[in-house]
Image (cartoon, rainbow, N blue to C red; front, side, top):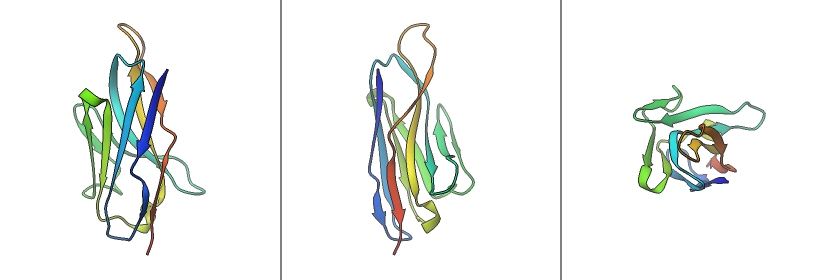
Amino acid sequence: QVQLVESGGGLVQPGGSLRLSCAASGSIFSISVMGWYRQAPGKQRELVATITTGTTYADSVKGRFTISRDNAKNTVFLQMNSLKPEDTAVYYCNAYVSSGVGARYLSRWGQGTQVTVSS
């Protein structure tokens, strides 16, 4: 089994910063893509950022959010600066994980962490 555990969410004022972390554990041989998604109330889950050897970002967060990873610790981070009320959502970690040589990469999700941006 593979588990992804997020941390770092919370309440922050507009213009503030938060750093999310997501650690993968369990039966892990290799991880390819890692990423962050978010889902606001009444809306569909949307991509925030992904990282492999390079990075991609949603237009709405470019220049404000930075994704990074520590491969040795199977951990991905999301540094969020200049936060806006519209960034309020549950943030989910995602990773494509292979559990052995020749095994397929399967998509795994964390349980989500709430980020609320409000004064």
